[in-house]
Image (cartoon, rainbow, N blue to C red; front, side, top):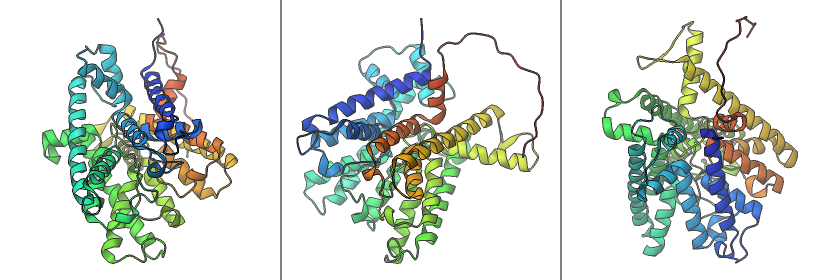
Length: 440
């Protein structure tokens, strides 16, 4: 009997959820004009929600009814957990047994090293998510209750808490968080939410269990260290590059400059919110943001990109080569070369996917080179930041970005496995004779 490769199961699961979401968004009850979205826009929006990206072709707050917005939140939550994790939760709640094959699929979807304790891990992930989102919603509600009716503040707090923790970047306003760019409560709460979501469930649970950096797993140490380094780098670069830009940081006071730089140093990790006008940032700033978006968040997180640990391994491998070392070392541990080659494959496949879709978008879109590339990387990294091109995409461009968001959420290597795998291929492994080639 033919059995699907785990990667193919993931692809079909995400695709099924996206299609169901798109069909529901086409219903008249989903939009305020009572017409429903067209198929292309509905598919784009559902993909953006399930893939927790945040790129939009219609304004969420003014286009969708409460039904449509709550549907988006459901898709965001399911996409943030992952289709298989969400499905396993349904099985657990129904009291059904999860077999070995399903556990292996869950291990693959969560990028876990071992199958041991996978069901308990899912239970902890769900509980942890709900607690964090509840706490975030309470803080946001209390703050927004100072400027709007309490019921409206509750709804806004819940919406932004779920959107933030899952790194979705969906906002009820077309200008995202710009009205609260200088509000330390809102900015710090939302930043905390998407940073926790971007660290990854395994890292957060490891922190809760160990409560000491020294006792953490190598994965957690590497993720936290590189996350802090990249966030600090992004914050400093944005501050320096945009300091004199009259359309972004220049008109702000010093403390407001700090909050804006702090926020946007973290956002490219996969959040998608913005507190300054992204259409006005300078080209050098766009380059920095594009690099951070391509790297993305952590493995087993709600974010996208090639992942922080993948980037870390590539840097460590480069350093080992430059130092003429045979092994890659970090935190007094050696990294297997099999992981290094897998990291290399992820980076190369990511670059190839981005280049291919960027090339196609240069054909379909009449826009500057930098805008197209920025939007392409934002879609691949499931970040959701935009310099203004996405709402004006052609139908063909919207389809291309939809596909790229899908690839970015699943991961380039997962997509490659899904496309190239031929089920349970049998046969022995063999190896040809070695022969060297010139490189460099």
